Amino acid sequence: MKSTKYAELGAFLRSRRERIKPDEVGFVTGPRRRVPGLRRDEVAQLAGASVDYYNELERGAGSQPSEQMLAALARALRLAADERDHLYHLADRPVPRSGGPASHVHPGMLDLLTRLTSTPAQVITDLHVTLVQNPLAVALLGDQSGFNGPEASFVYRWFTDPRARRLYPGEDHPAHSRGFVADLRAACARRDADDTEAGPLVSELIRRSPEFAGIWAEHEVAVRRDDRKRIIHPTLGRVEVNCLNLFSEDGRQRLLWFTPAVGTESAGKLDLLGAVGAQELAGSAQLVPGR
Image 1 (tube, rainbow, N blue to C red):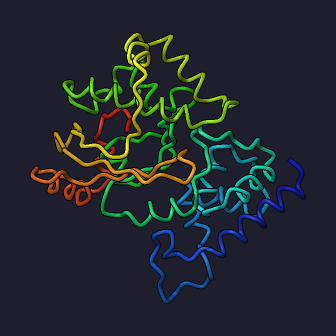
Image 2 (image 1 turned 30 degrees about the vertical axis):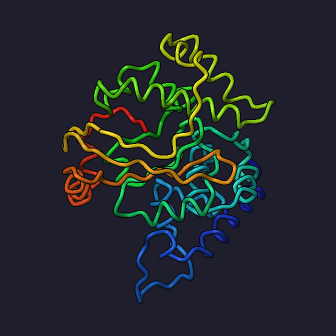
Image 3 (image 1 turned 90 degrees about the vertical axis):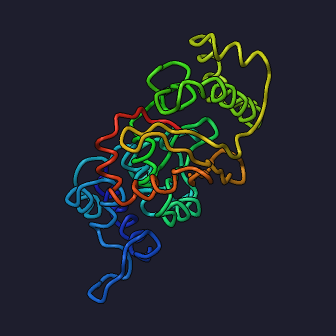
């Protein structure tokens, strides 16, 4: 990577860092703060990077950042779509296609996710690829990062990996299967004719899962806007929640948040989820990530 371009990358990161107010991303501002925006260590924390590594990036030194790190930095710095693309160009990395785990998340949706501190929430694509989770969502559902290719879609894992179904009681599986397929059909119809993601995903599912193929052949269609779900948590037991959706303008992304179902003990369990701490519960959980 050319040193001049790397220096420009560092300058761009610094300029984006300095424009963000700490309280906009969940940090408390104190009287001793000496910088107008975020500190380097705060950006590193948001992006899941070491402070030393991020410092090197801003200095225009170190190794070329990976595509995963660039996606994390773009979200941490609340970059707009054009800014995100510019970041990838400066790092000499290809801009990721829409729909994958590194897809751009609208800054407004990220801001809303940041403010949902007392309820599990996450942003997914219309193909059920998880883009970002808040700590309570990780604690409740498991860490959904680290999947690539078709496996990044929870719908794909639902029909091809039995472990993905451990999140829900067995008696609920048929309804979830039909719901996933109907929602996926609606997503495919909304996409452009030259789309290269939805079609191959459906073809692979038809090839790999007789259950999916059978339901797909029925041509049911229904966008999943809200659901009442029973989730099996290894520490809290069965938790019954309402799953609510906020859609982006183009329907390609949705913000999901989970509230306790009225008339159940789930409110106390979700309170416990926060009190015990997302990190501890996520570490003890043996869940396969899923929606």
